[in-house]
Length: 454
Image 1: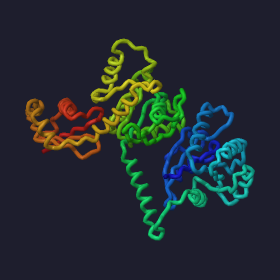
Image 2 (image 1 turned 120 degrees about the vertical axis):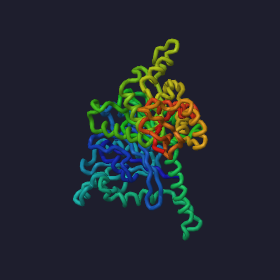
Image 3 (image 1 turned 180 degrees about the horizontal axis):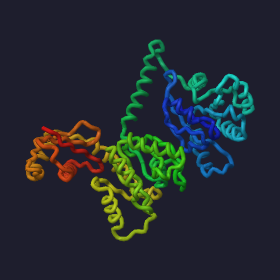
Image 4 (image 1 turned 120 degrees about the horizontal axis):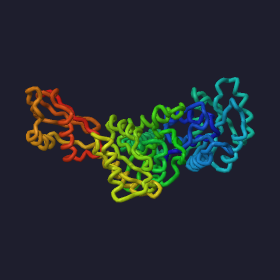
């Protein structure tokens, strides 16, 4: 079983910086402003062959004017409940504060193993300044500088020393330890190669609410305030026979409306999540309709050749008449032309209306995206159609397509070999694409068709 480390403390003490160091990457947004992290953020790492999971939490505050205070507290307490070891971080430069005392009181009640970590000890002259933290009554103080890594080695030695030892009947050979490491790496590889489904859209469309509903717990903070989610939150979903990685992202607004550095990084993380995903569930606010920014996000998904499912969320709040959903669906598909072979599902996360249908559709789109068509089957189908409806004559040239094949790309792409590829225009390309979609079911997946010289 993987050991879990939770990093807690008041805002702006360096929790996310340490989180990134323990995970060996830049998974959490780091900014000098306080209160950047809000949700629980998970990562993985190992120290001297002992594997662990790390939870980054929002800064614990008490009686502040932060509208997210109660939700952040809830996320911190959930992280503490999940963890085996708690790293309580304080700021050596600012010294002991009343908020540090509040966090210490909560941790003493938790009965969990707590290590007190004084961060931002950037020089040996500051070592004597940390002794005031002994008044918190949490034992030895580990002085570190998470931004440079100074002192983190001694800290991690102590962290993993407390982890349950793996029972190894053959200590000399290390076979059991090797098998444990191999099992962990195989599990990590399996998780990495599961379908990656990203939930994207404008702020306040219901993305985090969908994640929480699917997981059955309050994994992410949900408020009516746009921009609540900042980091891209990755979660493994394994229920009802479905197994995939779910990615909640920050809302993507127009460039002109992004005024803060933090929001800029959040949007960049969301765009990066689209680029690294297999399928995107584009959430649209039913009350606002499919607007220009929704179309921009859709175009970004299509440009990156990702599978896509459009979810019209908050459907329960819309006044309906006969065939309302049909008119709205037709309007959306008309806006996204020419790539309009896309599933549109009307959902309500609050009432759980069609939510699981949306997930099942996303998995089906993933399978469509991974589909491989044999060269023989492809040519047996498409060449008679081309012969019956050949490309138009251009400048007196007759274009003869000899054969076709699917290219070895992660998304569906096909090469058609002919004598004059330069004379084949977009309308004929769309004609062939539509025939392939009808026959082989590439619903929800962008496709590329190339004409090449034989």
